Image 1 (cartoon, helix red, strand yellow):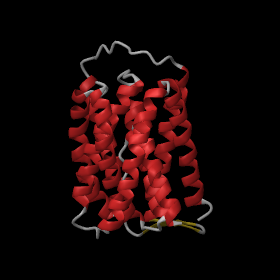
Image 2 (cartoon, helix red, strand yellow):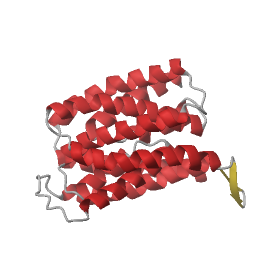
Image 3 (cartoon, one colour):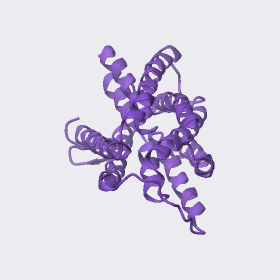
Image 4 (cartoon, rainbow, N blue to C red):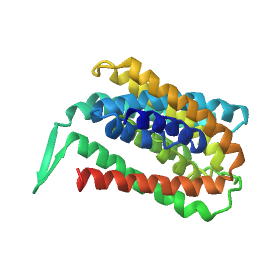
Length: 266
């Protein structure tokens, strides 16, 4: 099972390098289901793995001028504040046993993974729906409230990042494409930078109350590093519209799988 887990860790990096997100979508399930790590520790490890891998993955996009730094900074400020609030206030306040409905006992682990899965399903819709549109750069005539919209989206992503250990790329990429009309590959590069900021910040906010197995964590991160450079090379050869379509279905399938496993087949 460890061998499968390390192989899946390479796929985490490929996902990040290829589509600018999806790393946490793989990381949390890999850590929980393959390495059998408890969900709170898994979300903390996920922040480190995805954060460092995303930071490494931004370099090819910087070289190709496919990172919108201004948007990343505006997005990142409320995200960091929301990550701090989630990791220090919300997560510690969630009890181990949340509630029961008949024979279904909803634990903290089940609740966090279910929230994660629902967000994945919602985020997948806009990616699939827009996959038929041509991937041409569009003039973005920003309205006066456009920066406020980015700030709001940043806060939402930060809450998600802190709550379930997700870098938020599966929300950031659709938001950049749908709201700001960002071309897919620029959205990917910008997403990687935002994910790196959010995830590494969230990890730093968590290290004081989580015991870290550094040997294991660094070994998984190394596997993800190998994958992200493979993904970054592949992205130059694949049409943006097809990336969006494949990403949307990938997120949808993973979200449904986690929901079914946590609520029906646990």
